[in-house]
Image (tube, rainbow, N blue to C red):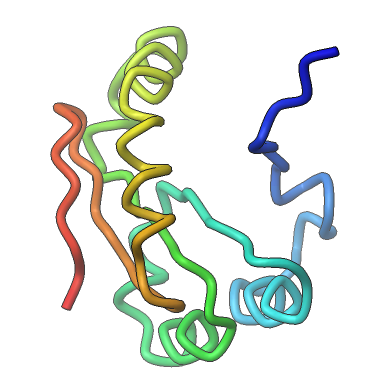
Length: 111
């Protein structure tokens, strides 16, 4: 039987809807090696949340704002197309690394 190597888990499937970003990032850091994909670029700008993300050791991919302007099916199609590149970056990344992903599939490492 086929067993996928990667799983997708929505934030709402693990945490209540009103959970603070720093709280869920910290909780995930105590579990397995999570890779986070989010369109919430504010996380990368809030020093408290950046600290929680870095301390968690999880790799994070920020989808640039243009992603949310696309119809859902186009978002899904593009994400699936670029997914192998995200996996490759995540597997090679140091713990706590961050990346920005454009709607054209360009992946830039955050410093």
